[in-house]
Amino acid sequence: MPRPSKGARLYWREAKDRPGVWEIRDAGNVRISTGTDSRSEAESQLAEYISRRHRPSGPAHPSEITCEWALSIYAEEHAAHVTSPQRIGYAIAALEPFWGTLPVGAVKGETCRRYAKSRVHAKTGEPVSAGTIRRELNTLQAAINHCHREGYLLEAPRVAMPAKPPSKERWMTRQEAAWLLRGARALNRDGRHLQDFILHGLYTGSRKETILSMHIDRQSPTGGYVDTVNGILYRRPRGKTETKKRQPTARIPKRYLAHLRRQAAKGRIYVVERQVEREGKVCREMVAEVRKGWARARELGQKMAWKRGIRINLSDVTPHTLKHTAITWALQRGATFWDAAGYFGTSAQTIEKTYGHHSPMHQESAVAAMDKRA
Picture 1 (cartoon, one colour):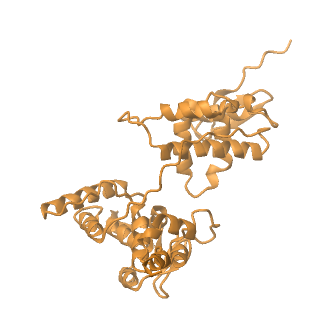
Picture 2: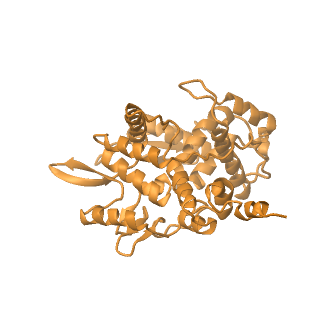
């Protein structure tokens, strides 16, 4: 009588000429090296192996596959190939505690509303915003749709979304922007590169990730670049395909171009960079995040303004506010919806709907008609 299978398990494999490692063993003489001597890392790989092994091999009914599996498949097959996989990772981490063990068939209005009520900030206990919940549930819907499209699911239930919050229209006045820049300059470590970040955002309206990966006078597969010779801004990295987050090529305003040329003359590699010392040498490196420096600059700028008797509130200003500000200023100076859409990479419909009232031409013909005598 054959021995019963022990199931998938970890086995320590010694080696004569190299360090030992953990390997996964399973029925059918399956042996998979984990490539690590760390038990915890090996256990994580074992859990992933078991999860993959128990997935349905063919199209399954939504009641036969859990949301955790759907999210896992989506993360492995899709999220790993997008520009910002960490965003999908954040959403999945928030979704799994509630949806993990529920079957996909349980996705309906009642469970989605229950999820929305259950989402609170871990530190404060305050409810999470409707916009955040929508982004998370959009990830769940995308995972379900992916599994259906790829043949894992026979049908794709619809995720019920909370009402879409109104579009944010927060933009800075010139005075607010000036004090934010002063706050950045007052920082010791982060001041210079944060100032460069703010200037690029105000002049080009580019998104945060685009700004932080921007090179000077050199093409790169990891980021766009500014051509200071011809005055052209290439937002999209070389070889990257166009996505919904458009990154169009644009001309660089003359005043900002002069600043970039001075930076290029100093040997700058990135638009936003910091200098660090390694082994007695000063090296230039790309800045990955500005969150902490941004918060300090915002607070400092507000305090400095208040000391001068200028009451401003920068508490709700985020890096994305730079894009709102750039578009608003452009329209206030007379840019057309069409030109603004092409320059900032935002549809003309969105420009008109969200920012149109800032344009001096807004409803111009209607107002002129109402001013005419009968």
